[in-house]
Length: 251
Image (tube, rainbow, N blue to C red; front, side):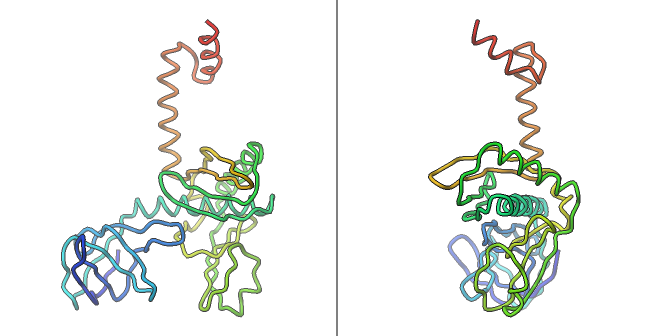
């Protein structure tokens, strides 16, 4: 939660465009969706950053210019993105470290999608998944390093691009170091668990679908419920379903 003065409020297509003196709302960017929440109880349904780095909050009702408003971020949504973004960093760092592949695409939707410029096998991904969860359970500090253009040469990090101003590097000791503008947890233990759901190969690229934290727990709970239902239908133990299905097919 935070308080900030309204600098500008103008009507737009779906409501009102509000610019604040300062904000804690994350605007869409870097593969991470925008925050939602409220300003003085009014719903914030979109947050975007323009080319001049001005952050625009889109709301349903007008807010008085010059007045101080109280902002509240939807914490469940924000923390979900933090867990999944940090989980993706560890996986991308491990794949880069052990196979030399770069993350060339990142999207946070129903699943977290990460594209790598190389071929990964099922065995490769299983090993990476094991290592990323070990990093989570070790509860490592997720460090934020802010450095000027002259200082970036000190660090060996992913996504190294030329930035005129300050570069923000997210570092997880022994696992990843990457330039990033997104939201992350303070310690890897907050991620809880990371699960690779699927992967696809296309030419010389591999797209990995994964879930972390609360979202991964909800997915695995759903899988467990489905598994239990099938177990009862087949009169088979939960860990013996595949054998029961094979027997049913033979019959």
